[in-house]
Image (cartoon, rainbow, N blue to C red; front, side, top):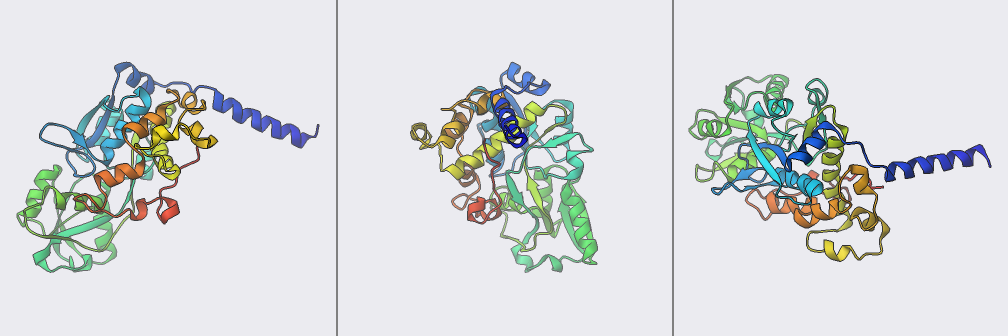
Length: 342
């Protein structure tokens, strides 16, 4: 037998061994499993992403991701608890162990992935920073904001992007730094600020939510940054990172396969070998991640695929009216591309 043939067999055997071997559990993974629920850091209240109604029921794109993690680990999407956090509180909550994962809209950056001691677990929403102004101001472009007073939350990438943008365009501004979103929006709505800046999705959310009934507001066309938003976990627990990361990838993969919460039971009967492995009919993936083989079946059945979650929470039929755009599947001109399950 040639050396080339031996190498090919060794490579195949190694891959097979990897698929069949259970991943070693880690501290967070074990702790979450032992306590019986996933504790997620979410926004204090952002329509479409994480918002609690008068009965305390949380809904949103980021809430769905937390529920999907619980569905994968426990087989029950309701085994979750939510910790509302401001932009400054979220990272302290994760570092201290108060929460298991940040599913709150958080931008993925080099410093957060390294110096802060976190691991980025993927992107569930591609965004960009923008500006909102009262429509009556007749401001049509961010280039018209020279000398403006601008509301912004401190301790965010938004604050740095704002300063960089104005400096690069040789403009000046006066920042109004307020940590709590409701207080910041009150300052903006009362006229204390000429504009409010955050991710464009957040602008759409507050316009449909907290600013509703407080005049007309226009989101200016410029996007001054890249804001890939997604889940974050602590360094040092690869098994927990694997679970969070692959749940998100799995929701995207399910949409690519055309598997929905409505047809997933029928899909269990498919002859497609890839879908059979994905849904756990053919075992292997669940053991590799350290959960039940039906983990992705449970995610899709109880929460839905990525597209279902998007449409339900922030899509064109919701108050936010956000087109898929960059968040469409790669096959439809977007950036959502699932790493292969194999």
